[in-house]
Length: 423
Image 1 (tube, rainbow, N blue to C red):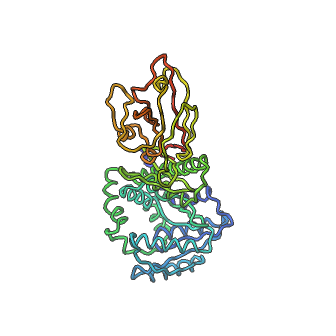
Image 2: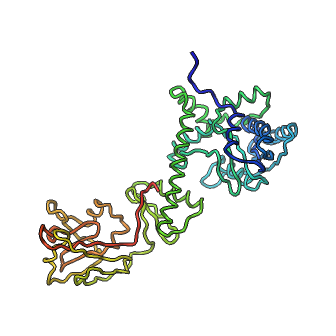
Image 3: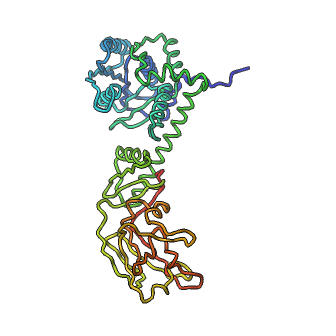
């Protein structure tokens, strides 16, 4: 009986399929060549595919100087490219740990700087399925959001260049098998055995342990990464549309990603506020809120004589009253009495439900999900010393209109917008 298990992807076939969906014709493609088996196989595969797909191939070796064998690896890459007649660009970089970042991150940053400056239209990297699964797992264990869980994209932008990973769906064992079958040579990085490095710990200890129970864990995590990547793309589109609908300028791609990262990492008790184009963006109870920056505007008590509309430019809004029978405030109770709008002073209480006791506005605001930064910007309606109505909360039970009575329904219209936090 034939096995139903899916066969490992072939490096040449996977790269050919990728190139079919990513037109590199007429482009200069530089392979990031470390000398390891993955990059050697990628260079070999793309060398065979370059004539058919019409791109000019070269190799790019970055010497980080972190290993005593670094110069031996560089000489290996020189000999390999000479034998294969592939142009090789070599760059030496100085790498040191930076504040808040480890040596591995600093090396990657230096390497990417070389890629950005390279005389190429596209940079091809040899990340494969195991790398992808390990990256997703590490990011999840670190508590990463949607973007971190998306892993590495098969194609992305790196400055003005295209960054491609043609072997991202190929498992490590298929790459090694291809190299051995083709009689290819490569170098081994001795640091790959150092389990003090997180990736090596995941690869050498955690991965095999997971594989014992979940044999296809790499494919599952890679598939999850694609789902997360699609969600991340949707999030970027929604945030762009949300900002445009509110008349705010579109942020750069880098700022957009940072905004999504901050908005998506909201923690209890911590409120993230992002300033963009003169507006503040904040998440409150699953919704994206836009407000104006700056201190609470000064608002002096203002008499209300029954007008249907009352502009309050200090608070950036307008108060409206609509006549409705049996709804809102009992109009008869306001006749002949002095009413005015006042700012919140603290300690006010309201009883919007006659079946429940009078409660502080703080508790009522929390219960009604009124954002904290809006609470002191609301006009409160008083009749004498009685608090009659609060925007977002309702009318005090003593002043509520009853069936058949003439009522006034107040509405506070503030120039603000609301959208789902998934944006």
